[in-house]
Image (tube, rainbow, N blue to C red):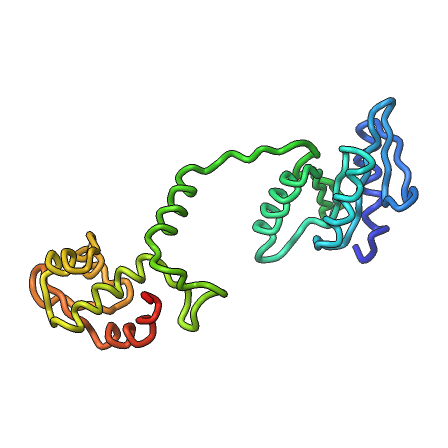
Length: 221
């Protein structure tokens, strides 16, 4: 399919099978379908998903609630993700979403209509926990030159700073001194390779940990 016009006959046949009378290029609209006394149905055709297509479709909502976008079905490595994300976008905007396979089969990914997403309470609480745990605003303007600063990273930095001053120490003492309640677990898991176990429950800094203080130390303010 090299032209938008190549999509038209497949979408037309799809809608006619549902009882619509279909005509193309009616005014500024790519395709209009009428069925009895129902509201008209309009479809905007494009060869690829882009912001212009969404702008056009949202504008058509001034004419009718039955607005679809139609594109060739995405293919390639990221096709599934693109399909999922654009279906969510259409539902958010109240649009319908049609995709046309290479064999001409039209698939309705979603139909127009109001959409009220279900709140993900656990993700919301996780977001707020991270917000409150972060000290300051270390990622203002985007990531630092070494990457995103997380609350976990800041906890690791607190432990590393303490060990840099005191030398090897018990995890329980590090936890009490730094306020990082899970200091022992954090140093044991050692995600950043900043810590090494000296003996049971006792940890020290590695060379990577000292470099981490140089690279990330400013993120604690």
